[in-house]
Length: 153
Image (cartoon, helix red, strand yellow):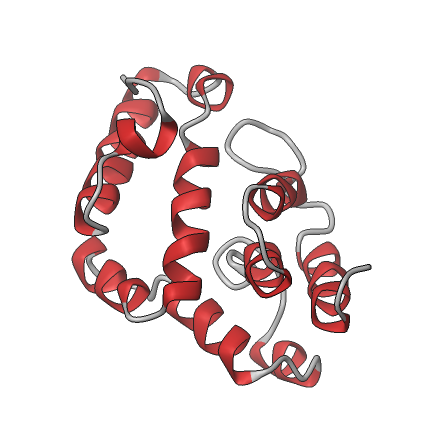
């Protein structure tokens, strides 16, 4: 049985991503669900569902805080939310400060680098995103190939 925090996270994410699609034209919530299914604990699953609600969803800070998530979840979601104008290095430094955020970020990278997702992109977008994913993985202390368990090109 899912924790109350996870149930609230699913509800918030479903509202935030309602009608939104990803770069591949798929419902955005599907990405959050795949990331959720790739982690182990209910806290990780809650953060996975919420990790993109500010960047790609429609949730407001007020709506997010109204859901009354525990500080550990709020802090991890905050760490995972890239700020406007922030470099990848600055963002990953914040992610590394939260074990919960770092675990979800690895699952997020793995999902973003799925072959079918990358194959659905035009070449320039694919190359740009793979370079960003590689840099993020390296800043996390690993490699994209290691995260994915295969060479990513």
